[in-house]
Length: 388
Image (cartoon, rainbow, N blue to C red):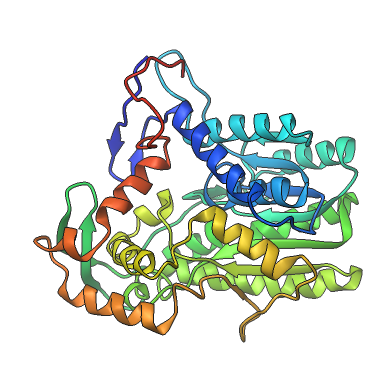
């Protein structure tokens, strides 16, 4: 079939297997072109099929020579429907890893569930014995609590009052004003339950109790802070409350793991185009301006460059992680440079529908969005018939 993108809001309901494979290959090639990482050898990645989770798995395997297990929830193809992008990404990653002689297995299911945790423990025990690194990179709008059965749903809302600012429809290029009502306490509670640190902590405790987490292991989760422009809908909104909980969990886990030489960190990463960030009002416009500034300064990074830098310069190769006053690793340091943010602020005050193409990299934003699903990859002929 000829596969074309079908977009619904900030989601593409189709994915291109060849385009996804090319992008995985590009990330593998990037890591292979860098210096080796003296790092972990048996890695579990929870949320391993896209974005920072996939890049972490690639960096661990092709940078540090690690065997990996990935956990995710993705959709396989059916007769009249393509698989999800993460499914195709994983197929290609496993192919590349196995051809290079590495162990790479995956579990497709609800990572929040006790069942998937047990399946993962059994797989580690059977084929690895123990893991020496656990990356937690889940991004989900909902979570069913494994003990109580309560279903939580996250929301993207400010706190304390209604918020208005500029946003962009990145498909049409229209810059408009968006107004978002404040979250109530129940919405905050549910967002923290989905996106906070409880499930990460459950994973680490389950692995410890089963004896499959090695002494000296590193565990890592990802967060974002961002600039003043996005604070109300991100860091000072419902997501920010969840990230506060995630970061507090990291400190708690770090204290626990230190007894056996282990460590836990949250890494604050750069703003990038993801399915999650595309859904947050204000953020796509900020990212399109940020990309223009960072590309002009030669500072732009994608997921794989960020994860390689995190692994090679912060976590491993004999380096001691440089953390901020809250114990977080900051690989958003280039984004948050004062000169970068000053230029973004200037553009933000000027940008409108009429000058969006001139002042921003909205074209790069759109391209990155479609590339998430395997489209707009330069080396792929999208008129060819492919098997989904």
